[in-house]
Amino acid sequence: MNLVGVALVVAALLAGCADVPLEGAPSPSTKPTKSASHRPTRSPTPKPTPTPTAKLLVAAPVTRAFPGRLPSGKPPLFVVVSFDGAGDLALWARWRAVARQVNARMTFFLSGPYLYPGDHRTDYKPPFHQPGASDIGWGDVSNVLGRTTVLRQAIAEGHEIGTHANGHFCGTTGIGRWTTAQWTAELSAFDQMVRTGPTLAAGKTVAPPFDPATVKGLRTPCLEGNRPAYRQAMVQRGMLYDASEPGYIAWPKKVDGLWNFPLQSVTLAGSSKKTLTMDYNLWFSQTGARTAPVAQVPALKAQVLATYRQALAKSRASGNPPLFLGNHFNRWNNSVYSDALTTFVEETCTQPDVRCVSNMELVSWLAKYGGPTGRNQPA
Image (cartoon, rainbow, N blue to C red; front, side, top):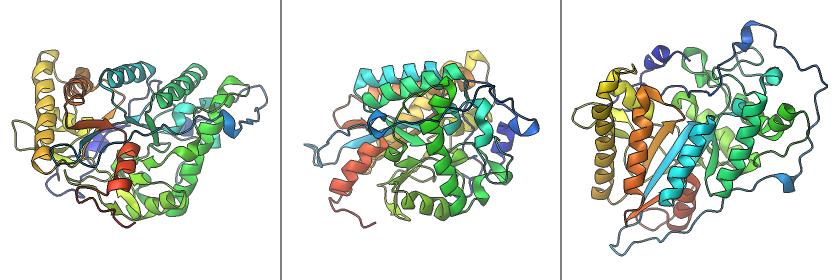
């Protein structure tokens, strides 16, 4: 999508961040297809009928148990690293390897079209758009099947899959207008893509990578959307948390029946600028989302790493509320943000008071202990 357009989306929802856009679009590993402008080419073979059974579906990852209190008397300092899009196979390999190094679990918000072949894209009928429209393109046979395999592997390693919805429509013609009924249809379309996309790509029955009923969290495209509307759709389907709304470093609370896991407002190290703990926002704060000269990369990476360290120190000084860090599968600005996050994860996740967890592992802990007071919160 047009990043300049995204930059015009003012984060008025977040006090102190009025000049910072909410986030940018994921970088798909295949070139986006302008599907609304021409008739798509259909496969000459009949559309296969997927018949996966429940036993073929990968279960939700097993969540680990953590103590309510550390020897210090404080709760664990949970660091949650999550990714939007989750398409690029090389970056899947990178982040799984990083997680293995430090015994971390991560959350990957999958975009539905990354599991669905482009020659069947008109099965998707998004609100206010032509059938088959998508601002992030669609999969091809090799990528869909490769992602199917890697998703199974990641879940077996304990990582969590959330949903990033489907077409990634942002701005004035985007998801902000969608009703609860339209969000219900969008989430059902995600389910269909997960269940049937691999089979359609292969032309024969292929087991889905996971059961979409195990998906319990959403991050909306560009962090946008009518929150009561889409949250009602989430609650109706049994989901547990929303990771879309900007916020602050504080203990999570339930809003509209869901745990609210925000991307947090922080100060960009060495400046007075406020930004969110999301790679695109850091990029926008540093260079206006323009690629800087390679010579500036070390300084930019050091600034991002210092920003993360400051946020961690602020959490420790505030009773260890969780730290939520968001990234995309991208190499923006010469990989400044991916590289800085890698370094931060490697140096932080093995610290005695830190637990690097998925969103669902944090949900499980909150369900048991309720937060710093040890009391569960009502829904």
